[in-house]
Amino acid sequence: MTTDDKSGGEHNEDLDLSPEEAGAAPELPADRSLLIVDDDKPFLHRLTRAMETRGFDVTAVESVLEGVAAVEAAAPAFAIIDMRLGDGNGLDVISRLKAKRPDARGIILTGYGNIATAVTAVKLGAFDYLAKPADADEIYHALMATQIDKPDALDNPMSADRVRWEHIQRVYESCDRNVSETARRLNMHRRTLQRILAKRAPR
Image (cartoon, rainbow, N blue to C red; front, side, top):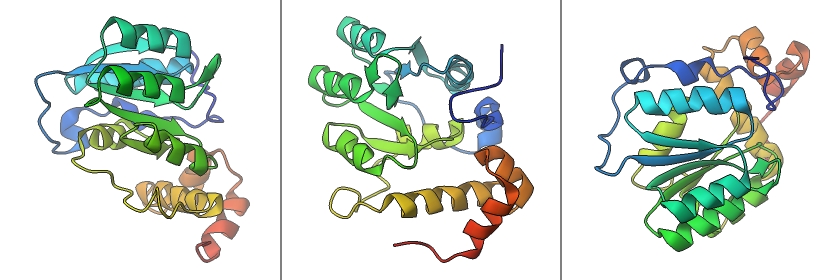
C-alpha cells in the first residue's frame, strides 16, 4: 500500500495512536456507528483502523454515491466526510445524513483554503470541520465534543489566510516547534515555512 495521499505527501502517523497514547477521552455512547467517506485509500484505511481501535463500528466508503447509499441503508450516529471526493462534494452526504438522522454528528475534512465552504458545511448540518492534515486524536475529540469549538465560525468566518496560518501554527506546535518536521508534514519548503512563521498572524 502506498503512503502517498492527496494531501500532498502529508503522512498521518498519528492516525495509528492507540487510545492510551492519544490520552484520556470521553466515553463512547451506546450507538458507535461511524461512516467514513474519503477517496484517499491509504488515509481511509489508517483512519478506519484508528477509529475501530477507539471503539467505533466503522463503515468505510470512497465516494459520495456510496456515502449516500450507506446513510440510506442505516444512518450512522457519527460521520467523517472529506469535502472533496472524486464523484462530487461531501456536503451532499452531510445534508442527507442530517435529513435521515438529525442527531448525527458529522465532521467535514477540508483543505485550509476552503473556509467558506466549511462554514456552509456547518450550516448544512456538519457538527464541525477540521483542516487537513488532521490526526485521529483531533478527529476523535471533534466527534466527541459537546459543542462546536469554533463559536464565531458562522457569524465571523476567518479569512483563508488566517485559517492557513492557524493550521500551520497548530502543526508547528504539534511538532514541538521543529521547523524541519513541520515543513515535512505540510509538504512545504523549509525556507517558505520560516518566512510564514516570522510574520504576524493575518486578519
